Length: 249
Image 1: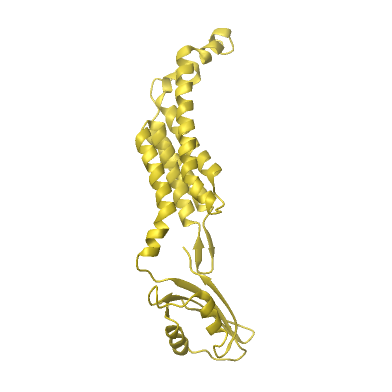
Image 2 (image 1 turned 90 degrees about the vertical axis):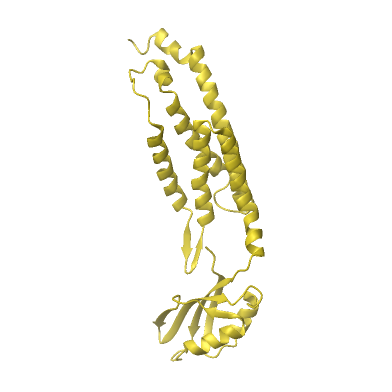
């Protein structure tokens, strides 16, 4: 059969073919909107991945999944294939590919790791798109709302529950000064902190010792704020320079 003949070209615009195209379009629109619902929280908090990223990931996942359900309409219904496509293989490819995309937003700087929540939610938005693609519309909407609610309000729950805030510390001591871990532990405890076990890293440059470690508050109420801790470190014997930052992950 001539693929460029009028009859062959018209098959792409037949009533059944157009019906399937419209149904797929509704799936794509729904997936895009649900992805944007999840992405709004990231956009609202100034993250690099926002509504556009989530909408695109969710919509693309839905597109790749939903077309697997209509192999008889591929290529204008003229495909010689008689074996239906396996949606599970497509889903595996989507999950793997989006995993690489999520890894791109994870950043590490010293003891700080950021982007984990964004990476997890990007990966999860692909699941929303897959669910739309296979026709689980109600479950997809519920999952999108759960994702958005988790990212919007879970931090409030975390703030209410008992916790131990952590601060990443960099200390550069004066030349030829010999620091003491015991003295540092004692000073930290006075401010309501302790050195996290296994985080101390020591380097030596130009006869100046440099220490990096994480200080964990003994409790949420006992640990002083980062500004007060900086004020105390400025008085610490032997300290020449220091840097403090919240140890996020």
